Image (tube, rainbow, N blue to C red; front, side, top):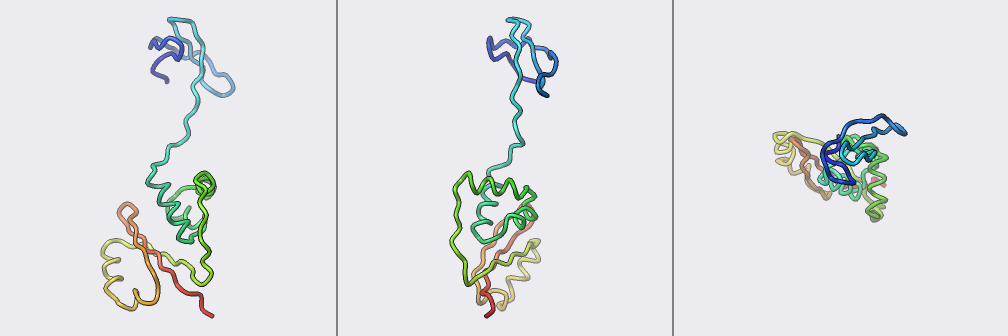
Length: 138
């Protein structure tokens, strides 16, 4: 429910029916009828930034959806909104793994896991995601 009337800014408002599937309100002070525009689900900028980073790293919309938990359509709209274009990755493809902190330390302690490819580690809540670029086998 809104805090005040948009016309007179008084707080003496009551519900007054539904118009076009939206709640209608009446200000008791100035007899003004109004509706409130529905706000969509607000997503933290941190999640948007992570999704854009993952896209730039070469992950598909659906892979990003599975990792972050945001619809691939939403990810696609963010890419368009921020006009993101990723560089071509012709010789490399991304491989990603999600670790708990102890698993990550164990993985990183083995030199063979680190050689021959670039990698990035990013934090996701209580887990860590590692993205490696491996060359396509010819």
